[in-house]
Amino acid sequence: MDHDWGKVKRFEQEFALFVGAEDALAVSSCTAALHLSLLALGIGPGDGVITSPLTFCSGVHVIEHVGARPVFADVEPGTLGLDPAGLEPAIRRAKREFGARVKAIIAVHLYGHPCDLDALQQVAVDHNLAIIEDAAHCLPGKYKGRMIGSMYRSAIVPWFTCFSFYATKNLTTAEGGMLIANEEWLEMARRWALHGLDRDAWKRYGPEGSWGYEVLCPGFKYNLTDIQAALGMHQLRKLPDFHARRRQIAHRYNTAFARCRALELPVEHEDIEHAWHIYALRLKTDQLTISRNQFIDQLRSRNIGASVHFIPAHLHAFYRKKYGNRPDDFPIAYGAYQRLVSLPLFPGMQDQDVDDVVETVTELLDAGASAPGLHIPDPVPSQAEISPDVSTGPAIAKILRRSFDVTCAMLLLFLLAPLFAVIALLIKLNNGGPVFYLQPRVGKNFKIFSVLKFRTMVRGADQKGLLTPGHDSRVTRVGRFLRKFRLDELPQLINVLKGEMHLVGARPEVERYVSLFREQYALLLCDAPGMTDPATLAFRHEADLFKAETIEEQYVSEILPRKLELSLDYSRKRCFASDALVLFRTILALVN
Image (cartoon, rainbow, N blue to C red; front, side):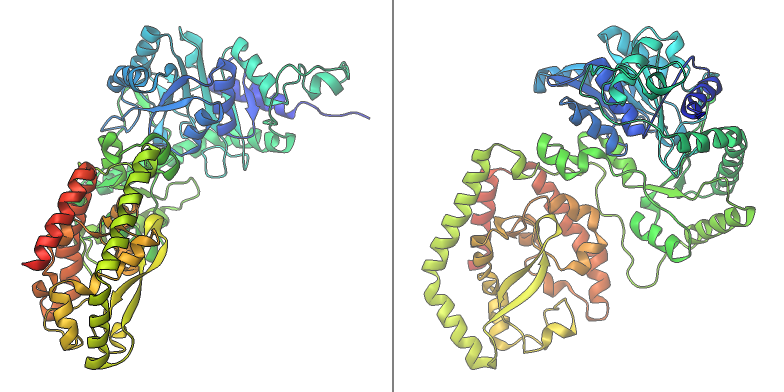
C-alpha cells in the first residue's frame, strides 16, 4: 500500500521558502514552539527570561513550565513592543532581586508590528542571551525589508521565531504553529516535539525507514497533523491576498479615525511592514465621558465585535501572587491596557462592514461617547499602584495581620456586648422586625458575601434603592442615631472573625457599582475589604452630600471615583503602623 507521508514536511518546506528560511518545524501551537525554544536552549530553574507583560498569558506560562522565572520589562509607548532601553535594567534587577541568570529574551511582535530587533540583538550580544521572537501576530511581517522568520540567518546569537496558526490568525490550520531556527537548534527542538524520539514517523515508517528508535529526552507530543498541514499549504497560497486586504482595511480605519481627537491610532514605522493581525486603538479617556469598558459595551450593543488585547500578564492572580507584581511596575504597558480597544479586522470583511465600524465608532466619539443613564469618567490615576496581596508577602505577615484582626474583633465584641444588647432592644421597640440586616457585597477575588449591619431602615426599604441621602424617610429614628456614630457597622466585626473582611481595607461595595469600576476593584479586591480606611473617613458624612434628584449619578460620577482613588493610594503604601493609625483616627471620628 502506498502512503503519502509528506504533507507536514511539504508544508514545512513551503513555509520556510515563503519566509526566507532554510527549514521549519511544524508544531501544534505557537505556545508549543515557544516551549520548544526554551527546551532546546536548556533553560530551566535558576534562569530568567525577559519578556513583555503586554502579551497573552501562554507566552509567559512557557517560562514557568521549564522552571525559569519570567522577568518583565516595559514596552515602547508607540508600538507597545518590548523596549530595548528597559532590558539592561531588567537584567540587573533579575540578578539583584531574584538571583536569576537571564538567558533569553522573548520579543513579542504585538498586533503584527515587529519589535526593534537590531537594538534587542545588541543587548543580547552584550549579555550572551538568546532571542525568541513571538511572531504569533506577525505573519507576514517585515523588519527593514527582511521577512520575520528569516532573521536567524544573519543573527550572531541563538535565534528562534515562533508563529501561530490558531483559528483567528492571518494563516490558520484551525490550530497549529511553526518554529524557525538554524538546523542545530531546530534538530534539538524537533526531538523534544515528538516524545523525545531520535527519529520521527517518516523516518520509521516511510519507504526507506526502519522501525527502531530510541528515546533521548522526555519529550512532548507537539507535532502538527497531515490534515492541518494540508490546510496550511492552501492558506499559505492565499496569504498575500489576505495580507493585502488586511492592509487595505487598516488604511481605511486610519484615514477615517485620523480626525478623531479622542483616539490614538496604531503605529507603523517606516522601516517595517505591519502584519495587521489586530487593529488596536487607544482611547484618550480624559476626553471621553465614559470608561473604556463602556465604550466596548456600546460597540457590542451595535453588533461591532470589539475587545481588548491583552490583560497584562503581571496583573493576573498567579503572577501577582507569586512575584508580588504591582500594576504600575510597568507603567507604559499598564497605561496602554487601560485604554486599548481592538476593532474587527479580517480579510472576509466587506466594505460595508468596514463602513459600519467606522460610522459607529465616529458616531460614538462625535457624541462624546455618551450613553443613556450613568456617565462614568475613568477614575484610575495613570500612576495608580496597589500593594501586593498579603498572600504574596512572607507568611509571617499574613499570620500577624490575621491574628491582629481576630484578637481585636473578639475583644471588641466582648466589650461591646452590652451595647449590642441595648441597640437590639431599641431597634425592636422603635420599628419591630429583625435586628440585623444582611446585604450581598463583593469581597476578595469578587466573591460575594453577606455584610452584617444593625438594621437602620423600615422593613422592606432595601428594595427601594441602594443609596441613602441624609434626609431619607426610610431611616428610622434609632437608625438615624446609629448611622450618625457609625454604630450600625459594628456587627461587621463578625465578618472580620469569619475572614470575609479586615479591620482596615477598602469598604465592600454592592455588585452593581463594582461592575461599573471593575478594573479598579480588580486591584483592591486582591485582598479582602475592610471596615474602615482613609476613604471611609473622608466620606463618613457621605449621606449629607447627596442631592435628592441625582443621587446615583452623583455617586458613580463624583463620590465613588474619589473614594476609589483614596483607597488605591492607601493600598499602595499601607503598612501595619498606617493601619493602626487609621483605626485610631476612626475611633476619634466616632466620638467627635
